[in-house]
Length: 422
Image 1 (tube, helix red, strand yellow):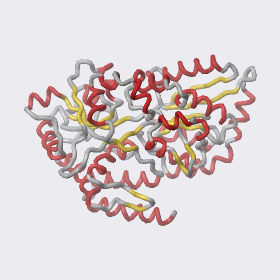
Image 2 (tube, rainbow, N blue to C red):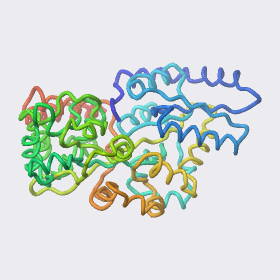
Image 3 (tube, rainbow, N blue to C red):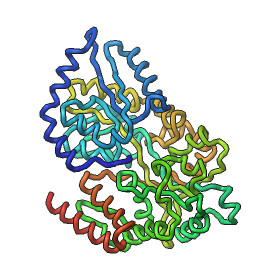
Image 4 (tube, rainbow, N blue to C red):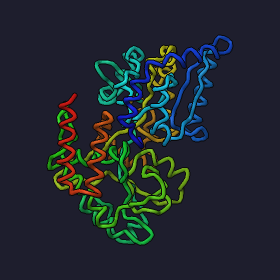
């Protein structure tokens, strides 16, 4: 969810699809023992829990299907969400199966790469998924990706810092602003949230707009130049201007180590950070609360998460889809349970997983998410690259070069013009 794919790359991707056959011909020539080879690309590190999970599952699937060989390629996240994947498709070297985030998936949809997975969801499995999660991956009545995780956003805070300062965890925007200022020192930032342009920055900002009752667009109509949007942009900007926001974090803003190492007193982050806190920062005294809300606002979080996409241009798309089905669309949801509760901590879009692993969802900080955040989320908006670009520019302009009112008006004009040009 880090960087969105540029419009230029999207155009290159579309132009390059005519060459997609070259990879398939080469793959068939190099196939040993008559096996069908499936290339699976993702952004998880090979030595991390996620990469090891897929390595184990690939081995298990190959034992069940000896005529299938699955080659996993782990691409560093910055390359993966930058140019690596789009360039591969543009040159006819795209994988058969790949991971995609809501912030990048539209690039592939617009290019016709997403294979229709509707037939790989049984009636029972489809009913097991939340309606929102299926609607989020349904385009033109086709299910174009397999969702298997939901990362919810909340506010993490350093309990010791708060107690030392005699401050209660904030429930409102004003209390969050006040706490951030009081907890800022020469060594510690009051609060850390993503201040860079990109999919993760847009993702982090979404719930604060929804809390006001606002939104970004609806039915190709821009909703950017509204009091609600300006209110959320003003919040983002205020904590930058008063010096409490972490302008230069030591690592990417999605890394829970920022609060685990004591670099910040508060961190706007996701449920994905819980397992890393437990594994890497067991002595850190960290709490989690719902995102503070504005006066008169309503609780809201955002659910992000990677999805698996099958390449419609692949000669092996049916076999690739069967692999995805076995991984996360089987009526026996054991792989989903393992992924969402052991490999990492996230909320499955499948209701049966939440029910089966009920005790785990009440363990430690997970209970805070389950009892107070889960149920307030909306799926992360899937945006076309140009739309994401306009929204990213709006946030950056409001933070660093324009007033929130000017940034919202400028972005609204650009988004309106874009929608009218379609």
